[in-house]
Image (cartoon, helix red, strand yellow):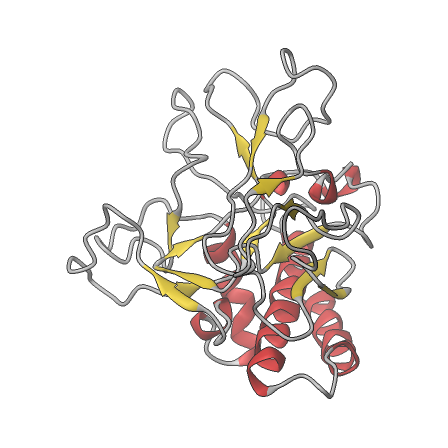
Length: 277
């Protein structure tokens, strides 16, 4: 894909984004929540800039190194790129792709996580082997948008692109994706397809249930839509056996700590709230 730099568009988006950001973040947020919401808005704006530069195609959620291999749909990608080995190859998924656009606001790495979250080191990762410091990442990318064409999105005002999808947790050195496309076949196109028949629809969906409470902030969990609407949803509003509102909450079966046990998926494992069409 050939990159198109649209300098004037970036400047205008940044100027408009700064004004909208002041309106989007409520004055009654506590300092940690205000920082979290601000970071998320800037990530949403960075995504819009990326789309302007890359022919209106969303960044990758997963990576692979050969067309004969399946996508690493269940293998989180290191942030910053290859911090363990220093290799110049790979790592070109969503968080690393957006980092250059976050330089408009200062230190890019610091804008990938919310200060209200707790660190989680991924199992099987040797954190003592490093050539630079791993970045904390608490925001999750909507994995249904992996290389998806923006013009196919039905309603940009409703589509969440990035959200606090891990609950009160950040991953040390890796970029979360949630929900996920199960792209496990190298001979098939890894692109979201609306569910018709789970026996023929490809790829199917997977959802990562938060391991920490979704009660991150007093106001709720933050989402940013494709149209840069910063939304706050009250997830886990009801504890099991009571059910939450499916129009608001992608999860259900919450325990007393605010951790869900069920994802509200369709027959293909897709969360309708995150489907681009």
